[in-house]
Each structure stands twice: as structure tokens, then as C-alpha cells.
View 1 (cartoon, rainbow, N blue to C red):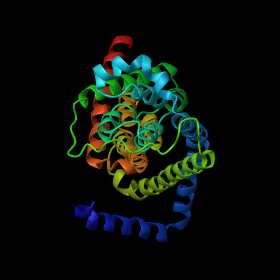
View 2: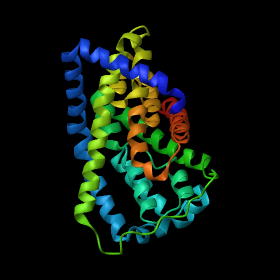
View 3: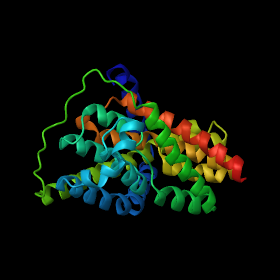
View 4: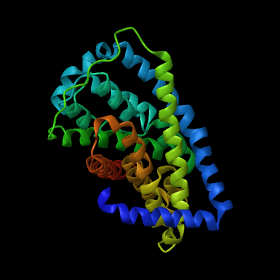
Length: 307
């Protein structure tokens, strides 16, 4: 970040000046971001964050994951517990997978090397957003939603295979288990989950403001390109604009790429969760980009077969 601090400072000043010049617009956009978080992210993500943290604290999820021990080890070179994180991630969506990976590392159940491999396939969106919000709500076609969901999941699995042999300079051993089995700190779990979901809401609101500041630049591009650019920054608004500017299969392909990449907003949410891992931002962004490429290719193949 130090190398780009000057450019980042100029951009932040640019956003601040825009906010001063048009306070009503930016207050409205901030509220739009908070509304999107409160009505879409909060009710679907918070319960998963809280409940999966309790399960992790109880120390029982290893038993649930034993059946997947060989597939996880053979395919991804990760512990069996990674399969549990993957399933919860595809059920709940961003950034639960990243949060669970960080929790497992913090409680001593996986090593840093395991965590870096797991982020390649355990950071996914969920069916409530892909099928419900995008497929039914935006694209007006539930089949499109299922195609995006299947491509997104298969892309994540292929991504896990790609990074199965990743090596890191310092493979820090798993941290000491701070929580004894069957003895949970419920108040601590509630506080941690609340702080995590608030940080997610803050990032979403800020990125609604950032997209508004960039709108004069985006307006120079054709509308379908604008939607993709917005999606690279924040997936919800990007998918909405893609659905209104592209038709049929092209909208599916573009939404698949945007959702699987996750957008800078979602990437920062996940990086915030992975803070204790010292996860390199460049590595995580690369993982999300390759996931997006794999998922996009799969979506094209599925569309070719079914349409």
C-alpha cells in the first residue's frame, strides 16, 4: 500500500471534495449502502457467522468432516474440516467462508498454509444472492440463477485444485487453541460476530459512495461496460446494472464473472476477516480473479448446452 499511498490519498481527497460539493447525493448513497446491507447482508450472513463460530468453539465440526477427509486431502491437500467450511460458504455467501477460515486458524485447527489454500475455494457467494437476488430478481429467470450458481461452485472447486500446492515463505504453525472443548464464551462470540458484520456494512456503504464518485468516469463507457466496472467494485450494484444493460446469456456471463470475483468491496470484507492470517492482498485478489475466469468459462459451457 505504501507504493500507492500518494495515488490513494489523491483519490480519497477527490471523494471528499465530491461529498462536500454534493452532500445530499452522498448522504442518499450512504443510506442506500446501509439499506442494502441491512435488508440483504445482515439477515442472511449474521446468523451463519454466529452459529458457525459456536460450532467451531465446541470442537465438534472435525467429527462432521471426517467423511470428507480423503477427498479434501487428495484434491486440495487441506484438512477434512475445509470441506465443512466450503459447504457453509456456498450456503451462506460472502464473507462467511473467509471468517470461518480465520476462526479455524485462530483456534489452532489449521495452519497458515492450510488457510491460504482454503481461501481459494472457500470464499464464495450464496444461493440467496445468486438465485434469489440475481437470477429471479434481476435477470427474471430462475434458470439463469441456477446456471450462475453451478458455474460459481464448480469454478471454486477448480480454483482449489489450482492452488493446492501453493507454498508460502513462512508456514506459521496453527495457533494455540484458546477455547476448551464444549466450553464456549457466548458473549465473546456474539461481540465478535457483531463487530464483523458491522465492518461489512461499513465497507458496503463506503463503496456505494465510491461508485457514485466514479460515475462521471464510468459514464464515458458504454452502459454494459459500466455495469461490469461497477461490479468489479461492488457486486450488487454491478449485477443490477448488468441486468438492465445486457440481454440474456451475455448478462449471465457478465454476472458470473462479477459474482465470482466478488468485487473490491467483498474482497476487502474478506481481507478484514483474514487479518490475523496476514493474508497477502495480491494473493487473495489473484485467487478471486482465477475463480472468476473458471466460473465464467463453465457458465459459457452450460449456456451452450442448455440454450
